[in-house]
Length: 172
Image (cartoon, rainbow, N blue to C red; front, side):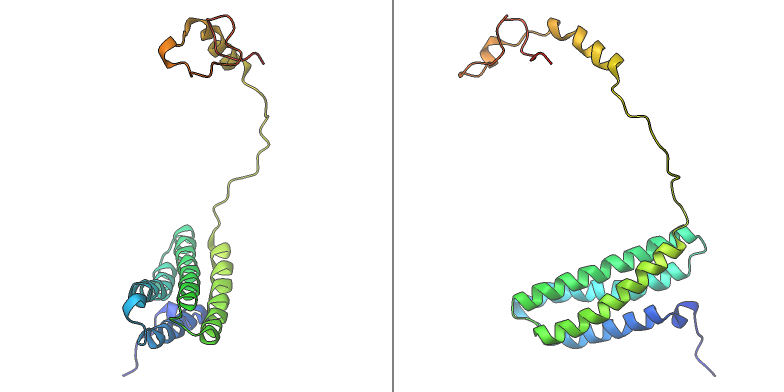
């Protein structure tokens, strides 16, 4: 009897991400002590890539599908950042990290194209008239004269433009 094949099993990006997870687990066996927190975060982020690809590929809504591919893409970026941290703290060899980053770069590129392909929801471009809302600006200005600052709250060095004792608003 043959093993069942799901739709995500046919995706190259899914297979590549499974390979990345396997490599991350292999490297993480040597991480301990101070590096254990980065190791745990790295393994969670690495696993998140294929898990979100599979879940996204199972969504019927194109918008949902794109969202899960974006999440997987974000997890790939997180993995790259964690690798930088591990290299900087001597937890991971730079040469080995570069190889895994090349794989991550390929995964990110594929996920970016997939997310853009399925993200069919776009706001149409609209030209908005930009201008000042003078009506509201005038209403605020009408009531400025009613506000009096409390003398005890005035700064000790004095207020510039505080000349008439009624307003601290500078003229425009």
